[in-house]
Length: 310
Length: 241
Image 1: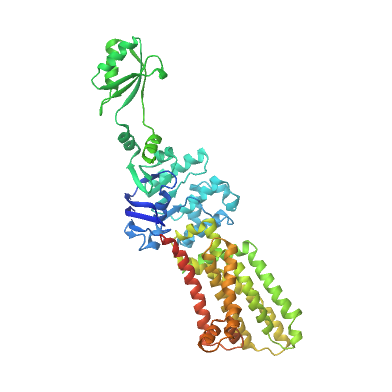
Image 2: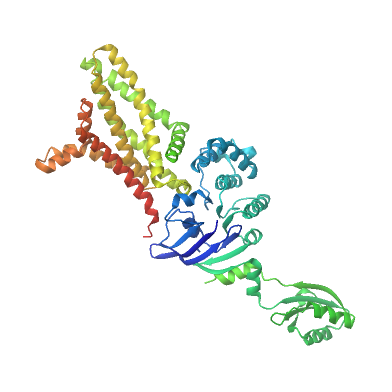
């Protein structure tokens, strides 16, 4: 099921938490919402899940408008809220049974579904424990299990790996990726590596507005501009190498990069060009050898900071 | 319809798991039993095979008990955030409210229902007016339903259970006694309106054995008003201001 959002605005009093946002997510796509605290990620998610109605704008899930057909829409959504609220006094299986019933899963299928989801989320050993006896990581799994129990077509996950240990994070990411192949998933996070690892598309939000919407690679390309290489070349005179590099057609600028080593250079290529091949050819001709060659990647963190600083 | 029952059952289980249900039942039966059989205007004192004493005590006991029971129904969910979970499941706000109402009403009905042993005991002692007893029970149930409904409304507008408790007592006391007292100072239309608003008027009329349409209308509209008020207070989240 596709999610189509048009001109979504949500006001809290006079403050606009989300300001005229439009985007769509296709079936089989995992969209990562990134943004600083208070950017409006959670507000967008709450509006999609019909926790509250937007001030203006429309949200459609499949063929249904969220405000006009709330119950129909809610059937197809699995939602893990940011705070992961749970009924503390209930054992895990009872809780999942309750959620399954709310989702109108037929009685004869409920046991099977609970068994499946407990296996998927790795809750076998904890299933009879009361939720308030569980550690944070397991509570998060219970939250995920309740979002998945009815096999929803749309999954909205607000910071799904919050509070998990590194092993669990990898497991949950794998799970989200697997699920994401058949479903429409929106997840939010402030861990950039996570978004990069799990999402097909990244949307950066700041002050209630979309400031970037692209793949991780696309974001890098857009912000990087020119290629920058760190090259180490040995067996030659430092200044000769410097001059020779400068002569290359594709090269825009060369600088000594002494922090990386004695014969290291920072080579910036002209827009749209790559100099690696030419440098290799140069070294072959002169009888030098290349001791290192690194591409400097623009970190997602840098892009994020650049786009969201006020 | 199923949604209401699923929510009611979870709520009812949570009453019994947290001992709340047992405490309510034991204290209700103990308190009313004490004044029906042992102390004050008890049955042996009045020498009549009638449950009037029991109904009068219950009228007051339930007035204090129900807010204690209903205060957590929505406020606790709002406090812990589980309300967000419920509201994003495929159930309507109305189903959530009525589910909660049903759970509290069933628990109170169980407590009132268990007092039927008093009825059988009195029956053995003398000639009891069966009609008046049955309508007396009906009056208790209707009154409870009205207070539960008010209690849910109080619980729905705050996330603090103590505030919900006090607020529902505050709203309740008007219907329970204040309207009745004030009405005696007025004549004419105002007096009649205040008298109509007084719970005591309707409760007494029903427990005397008369089921009048205006009594049913009174309780019905109080219940409905409380439930609709609660639903509106849940729907307030959709507003931007």
